[in-house]
Image (cartoon, rainbow, N blue to C red; front, side, top):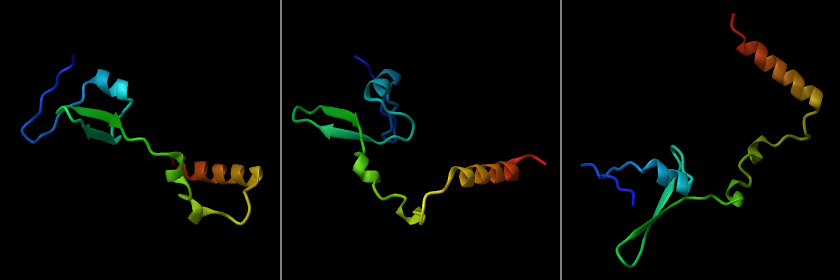
Length: 84
């Protein structure tokens, strides 16, 4: 058994072994599922791949960039980031 403490604001830290078991990291969403026997199941919130469909439609170009165009863009970006 792994125990934790609920603080005055209702916050708690999920022990490392449990975070690893549920496979959650900082800022991941978790789900609390109340069970009939008064217990609670904790699991990670998994987004299906379809949830990301169309996220970048606003950035769609007329045609894909060529490798030469990508290389040129990368060189320009690196040049802007280079320390003076």
